Image (cartoon, rainbow, N blue to C red; front, side):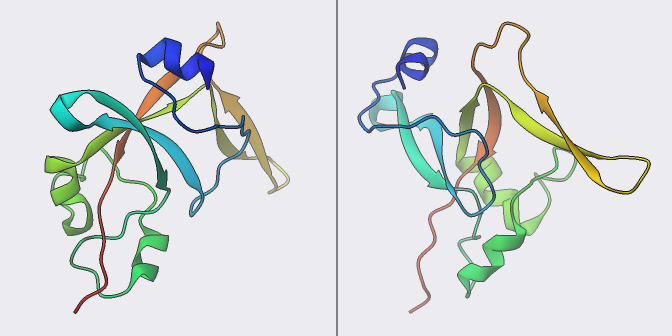
Length: 129
């Protein structure tokens, strides 16, 4: 948590334990513009349920927006225009198929091990009615 506060100029109000593998549907730290456009660190769930969705289960399929289509896809379009955030990390895994058909994880990060951010979107969903 101290590294995040120092690297991104935010106050860390909650205890953020180190996590080495965050999967879709789990909570993840995110940086966004808060009150008075000041940076704030919040916890978000790694799914995106569009505001118009009737069922939150739709979010289980919304875990990766492609840069080429994010502005046009109905599920991401509004969040892309109005609710962007940054996801801090010091690495992420990219899985590659091996010749025998199994998958091998490769850790991708900065050579110096310092934190970086990835683009993110967020949405506020409420049940219909």
